[in-house]
Every structure is written in structure tokens, then in C-alpha cells.
Image 1 (cartoon, rainbow, N blue to C red):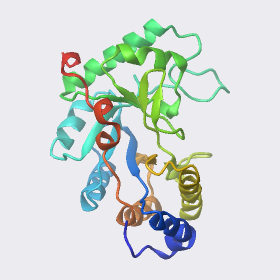
Image 2: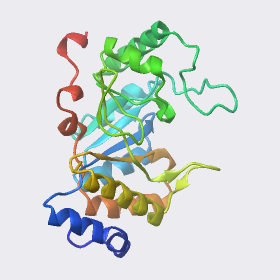
Image 3: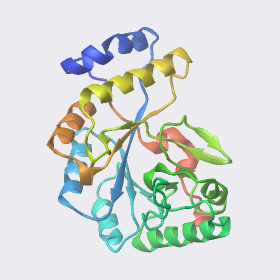
Length: 258
């Protein structure tokens, strides 16, 4: 963590970070970016940002027609990991019931088949992912039940502690740089930093110093203010690779890659 934080960072986080330093701990952060569909100008901006700050990023990608081009584009970026971002990223929830591609009446076998077909599409594109990121962070019970029978070893949603749920390793994000009501836009640095302070305080008071905090971005939806904030944030706070936080759950068994 940089000793010279921007003014807003010092004002909101300074006292909490001093308590962390006094206890000889530093925050553990990781980074997930959602909705990657293929090579775009926004993706280039994301990759350049990650490279400048040597920041590992997990790129949740959709299995669409441009997936092979996306995989080839990031092959030269060893600190970028591709995750599976849903089956088709299509909302199937009834009107007024939120968003998600798995509905209450879906059978586990259907979900299991969707998982395997989607993973095979990633394999054909040249990558063997081990993490599933449900669209809209909607973790239905059928998904958790089907994952252990798939080549995927872990799942990532939003705002829960890292751990194992129903036999599936889980590593969530907690800090969304965007707000979504009435259209995607920058959340604002004050709201973002105040939430981060609350998360740090919770971990300190419960002694969960190593409990990761996940940064969530959506490169296709970023405006200029979002990119500027991320530049300052990543300069101040280093992030760790998911593999460093999840161990064996970050690696797909060789036997399942066929």
C-alpha cells in the first residue's frame, strides 16, 4: 500500500489503515472484472491499467462468438485469468423478480448440462477456466448443487466471506465501482471509500485480517471518472491474484480438461 495516499483516501481510510498498520496487517484485495465479450477499446484500457500497476485481474467472460479472439488477446498477459461468466448471460427471471439466468423451476441436471456445455466452449476457445461467475451475482441453489460435478472448482458472487459453501470454494467481490440504478455510472469515490472503510473495520474487529475484499469492475461500462478513480485506487492498494487466495480451488484438475 502506498504511503502517499490521495487526500480523499487519507480522509476516509487513514485512521482505519493506521489501526491495521499498528496490528502489523495490510488489507487483502483481489480484482474481478465482469462482462468481457471480446477485444474492444475498453478491454485494451483495462489491460493497460492492470499492466501499469502490475495488478492481477480475473476477467469474467461470456461464451459468445468472440470468445476465441478474447482468449488470444490476453494470452500475452500472464496476470489476467479468464473465468466463466454464466451460460449465455441472458436474464430468464420473471418480470419483477430481479435478474438471473437460472430460475427456481430449473432442474439440477439441466444446470449441470449447461455448465458442461459452457466449459467445453471455453476449452474449444483455448482456455481451461476453474471459476464460475454467475451473471448478476445470482447464486441459485441448483448452481451450487451442480458445480461439484463440473470441471469448475470455485464460484464468485458478491458480498459474502470467502470460504466453502455446499462443497464449493467461494471468493466474492465487495466493492463495485459502479452503481446500476437508472443506468451504469461511477459510484463516486466517497461512497466507495466509505464502504471500504466499513469492510476493513469489520475484518479488524472480528480478527479476520486475511479475509479478502474483492474489487468489482465492468470495463465496458466505465466512464472517464471511473477510469481515473481506478488509476488512483490501484496505485494505492496492490491486489493479489485469485490463485494466491484460493490455492487448489483456483486450478482445474488435469483429468477434467478433456
